[in-house]
Length: 430
Image (cartoon, rainbow, N blue to C red; front, side, top):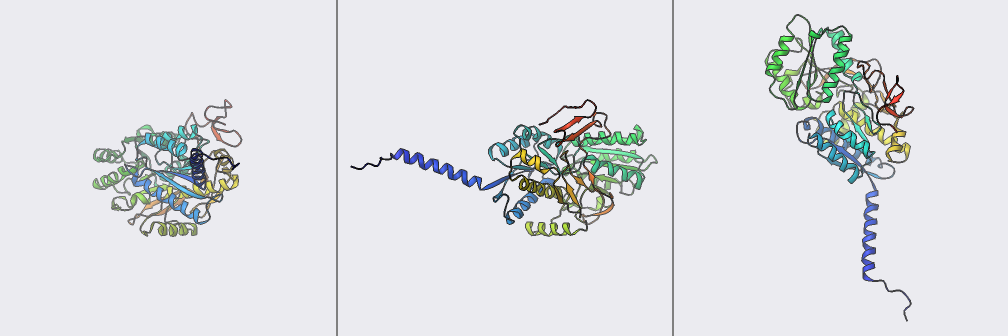
C-alpha cells in the first residue's frame, strides 16, 4: 500500500499559481521604481520633455554603476499632458499602483499644488526641479529649483543697481507662481521706494499668442522718461510670440530689457533668437558655465541623447542635484522608505554643475548660486552677473506680512510653517 498522500490536481494548480505570484513579486522586488511625472504633450511639453529625458539618463547612469541597494532602478514614465488635475491622478497611480520609491516631476506650480495633497496623503516623495514662488514647505517635497530669494529678488536687484531700472512691468502667466512671485516683488519694490504708478502688472492665460495690445501698453508705460524693465514670469510656449511682438514694435533689450525666469536654453533652441538677443535670464545654472562638472554633464547628455545640438538648462541641473541627493539619502538610510529617506537627506551635499556644492537644508530647499545671463544669438547665455557665494533657499518670503514670521524646519521643529510669534505649527507636521 502506498502510504504517501495523494496530492489533488486542484492543490497543484493553486500551488503553482501561488508560486507564480511569489515569483512575480520577487521579480518586482528586484527593481526600485522611480516615477517621472512630466508633460510630454500640451503647452508645457516645450519645457518638460527634456526633463523626462534627463531623468532617463540619470537612471541609466546609476544602473551602470550597479543600481541602488543592489537593485536596478526602473523608470515609470507618465504623461500628465499639461492637465493640472491629471497630475494628481497620475501621482496617485505612481504611488499606489506602480509603488514608486520617489517621483521626479512637475514644472508649473499649479501642477505641483495638484500633486502636493496626494504625496502627503500617500506619504510619497516628490523632487520638484523648477523655480517657484515659495510660501511652501512639505515633509514630502524637496524643492531643488530656486525659491524667490534665489532668483526673483536677485534679478530685481541687478536691474535696479546695474541697469538703473526705475519703472517695472511684472508680466506673467495667470496661475499661482507668477501671481505669488509678483506679490513678493511688488512688496519688495515698494520697500525700495518704488511708487505704485511705476509698477505695471499683467497676466495672460497659458498658451497666449496675441501680444500686440499688451506689448503696446508696455511700450507706452516705458516711454515716460524713466528706465523701464520687464520681469517676466510668462511660462511655456507663450514666450515665443511675446518676444517676437517686442521686436515687431521696435522694443530692444537696450530700450526695455526683459529678465525672464522661465526662458532657458531649451526654450531658445529651435526658434529665431534674433528678437531675444540682449534680453536676460535669471537662473542658477547656464550651459555656458565654465566648469569641469558641467563639461562632463554635457558630454554625458550628448552621448545619451545622441544629438550634439541638444542643450542643457537649469531645471536639468536641478534634477541632477535632486536625483543624486536621493541616491545618497537612500544609501545612507539603507532603505527607500519615505520616512527614513526624509530623515537621511537633510545635510546631504552633492556637486552642482557650476563648480560648487548643493546642500539639502532642513526646510527641504537647497543652496544655490544665482546667475544673470544675457541671451546671445546662438541661443546661449553670457553670464553678466553672479552672487559671490551660495544662497540658501528661503521657503517663506521676508517681504510678505503673513510670511516673514514663518519658519520651515523638518529636523528640529518637524514643521513646514512654524509661526515664530505664536510658537505654533499651523500646517502639516509629523
